[in-house]
Structures are given as structure tokens and as C-alpha cells.
Length: 227
Image (cartoon, rainbow, N blue to C red):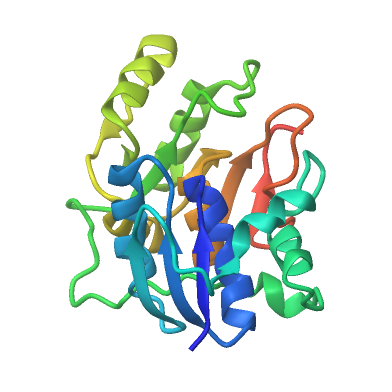
């Protein structure tokens, strides 16, 4: 069985999964320093049908395929899935863009007494000119609530800057994936949450950072809303 290792960041690990799938799957060892984030993303990764084990560890076995080699091919205008494919010498075909994150079905999808959208905002790769309050107001025209997923400190900063009707919802990456799967819409800037949304394959709205396009798939299910 193939073994893979990746040191992060979280979104980069999620973007490595199509390449692991293309290689026939295997065991993934995560060696990123932020162990809490690593454990949270590992919980989601373990649910994928092509992952046969996912471990957070200080040092991976010596016989692992090194997914960190993607950085040799990454840049601000390179697709990160493509970078992982090039690092593993895989042909970069349209199948690479097919949804790669499986969300286990649940008996009762979350509704919170009505429809909802999900929003995520981080200070990484932020567009300072984008009007997030207007975006929340728009999401409230297509759903009854807007849930903010991410860290509480990010939400506090978001509300301090934009004073929106979005409601903070604390969750790990696995629960966030379920929320995004059943949401009316997801809006986010470049972040692990946006990467998860892209991996699930639902329609989404991406706030692109100025001069930074490496994460986007430019797939039909994704709309870049600030260009």
C-alpha cells in the first residue's frame, strides 16, 4: 500500500487529495506543526474512500511519497492541484478537477429551522476592497440564515469590520464539510474552508485575493465574485 506524507498547510493537504486518489489511494501521514488543526483535518480525510489511514505524526516513515514536493511547482498563478500532480509525475487530466471530498450522508441534513448559507473569512489572501456586509446581505436573499465557520477570533474581527447578520458556528473541519455540503451557498476567500468547498463540488462564491490565483480551480461550479 502506498504511503504519503504532507507537512501542510491545511488547505494544501486538501489540495493533495486528488493526486493521492489518482495514484490509487493510500495512507497519509500529516507532519504539520499545528497539531490541533492537523487532527481536525485528519478526521475529515479519514472519511475518504481512497484514504486507508491518516495519521498525525512528528516524523513520517522513510518510504513515504513526499507530497511536499508540490512546492517546487507552486506559485501565485499556478493551480495547486496541478502542482501536486506535477510533483508525482501524473498526467494532469480533467478528472483531476472532479469533486474529491466525500461527505458521508446523514439522515437529517442541518436546517436550523430553514435554509442557510455558509461564509468564511480569514486575514490570509484577503481583498481589502471587498464588501462582506453586502455579501452577507445577498446570501440572506437566497437563504434564511448565514453561518460563519472558522475561528471565533476571525468572526470577532469580521463583525468588528463589517457588522453583519452572520452567526458564528463553532465546528471542526468534518462538521464544516457537512454544513457546506447541505448549504444553499458557500462564500469564502482563500482558506482551508474554501478548499473543502471546492473539493465537495457544490456551487460556491470565491473572493479572490488581488494578484493571487493559485488555489482556484476555475471550475464551472465556482464563481469568482470580485473581478
